[in-house]
Amino acid sequence: MFPVNRRIFSRNVFLRRLSRKDAEDYAGLLQKNRDFIEKWFPPLPESLDVARASDWILDEHLQWKRGERLDLGVFLATSGELVGRIALHSISYGIQRSAGVSYWISRSNAGKGIITEALATICSLAFEELLFHRIWLNIPSDNRPSLAVARKLRFRQEGCQAKALFLDGKWRDTIVLAMLEEEYNELAETWIKKKYLGV
Image (cartoon, rainbow, N blue to C red; front, top):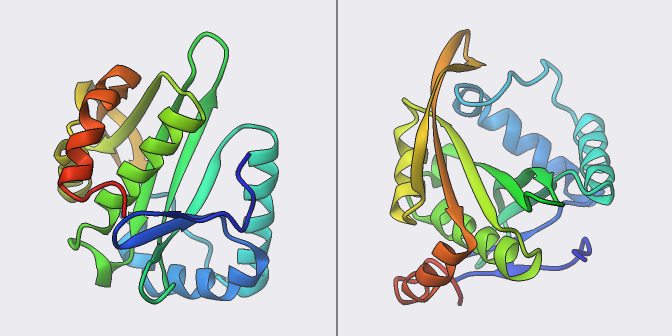
């Protein structure tokens, strides 16, 4: 359904699954952005070598085979440089047909609209190809840049969870935002006009 070599393009980025040949670039990206990432994600291991990154990539492939999550790299369309990650996680079929989304971007590429395009693109994949009914985000309430991305794409706020995630040494409140397939259908044309979606 989503082969390793498939690329999904938007105006400035493309998304694809990582392979073992990406392990060195992935390990380097994590190491360079460790302090930037760990504020919002679980702590990374002390050793971030190519072998560990390769093992993580293999595990991502197994999780996709099991239908649990789909992890994609965020690449610059012009250079092909890996600059971040985005994932559909907590995938649930059956009566829910839903998935959560998580994402991060390198410090040097933050604030450039790259993750906005990546989020719009993965939403298009989720609703139009994977036929999900609901996509949701669970974002720490003090992660203003991430909240701004979701709100730019008009994700609807559903509520707040008190002390829901233990990150960076403390419990953090989170904001739950979501989008339904009918909401996406109404927004997609606007996203295209604003160049968040499409090439």
